[in-house]
Every structure is written in C-alpha cells, then in structure tokens.
Image 1 (spheres, rainbow, N blue to C red):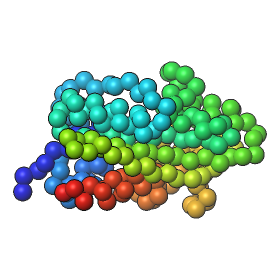
Image 2 (spheres, helix red, strand yellow):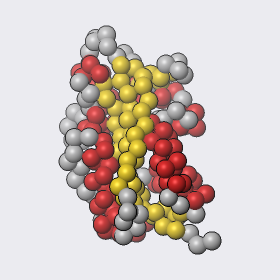
Image 3 (cartoon, one colour):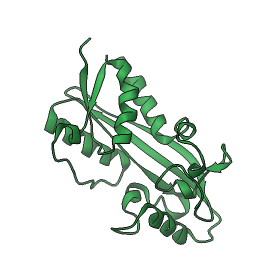
Length: 198
C-alpha cells in the first residue's frame, strides 16, 4: 500500500514522532516544514487556540498542497481570567525560560485561593474539502510552588497538579500523562473523525 502524505505544522521532532505513531495505521506518512525544507513561522495573531491552530494548518496546506494539521495548546487559570491562554508560550515577555514563565504565573496568582486551571489543546485539519477542529482539555490546580524535583514534562507541568493522580504532571512519566493529556484527548477526537473520511 502506498503511503499517503499528511503535513504536520510543528517543529517538534518529539511531537512529530508521536503523530507518526498515531497516523501510521491509516497509511499516512507525516511530513513537517523541517522535513520538507521549507521556512515556516506563521504569526499566531488570534485570541483563541482554535484560531491559532487554523493559522498554522491553513498556511501549511497553502504552502504544500498536502492535507495539513496543526495543534495549539496552553494553560488557562480561572483566577487570572483565563490567562495565560494563547499566550502560554510567551507569558511574561520574550526571553523567559519555561521555569521563568511558570514562576511568573505563580507570582501573579499569589495567595489566591482559587487555584483552578486547565490545559487546552486544539487540533485543526485542513484539506481541499475540510476545515475542522477538535479540542481536548484536562482540569487541574495550580500548586503553591515550583516542583524542582520532578523529572518529567515541560512548560507549566511543574506547577500543574492533577487531582486524579494526586501528583503534578512533572512527577508523572510521559506514558501515564499521555493517557489523560489535553493533546491526547484532542487527537483522539481528530482520529475518530479522520477514520470517517478514509
């Protein structure tokens, strides 16, 4: 069977490998801008995860002609009015590390008793006949401090406490976290739909 090509709007080798594993059973080979050798850095100007995800998937489809998908994700904190949201990767300004951003969030939240937060991920897909998106969420709480000891995760995981595990995401091996993650939930919805158009 000839492999069909699906373009993924990501620069992350780790994410690309994960997507290849998920889509391989459908006979798809994943290509990325990096693999194709094309410059790709569309400006994410929308105020929603859906909007920013579509900016990436639409632009990649325009550039390659391949059916294209993208994801956009971040963390939203109730007491901060949903911040950082779509600005999760840029929260606190340019040049900050993941740890700096997490500490900035903790500082901004202060001693507020409302620690509710959720991670969101939107996967969008664009081809000649479709423009669809799927969202996954995982609910949790913002811890009172930064986990210096956790070996896993990235981004805001050291301050994101997941009640069902009784741990922060930074304390949970990737395989375990991926069973409940926002990205996994969004991808499951996407794959469920994707099977219907094969």
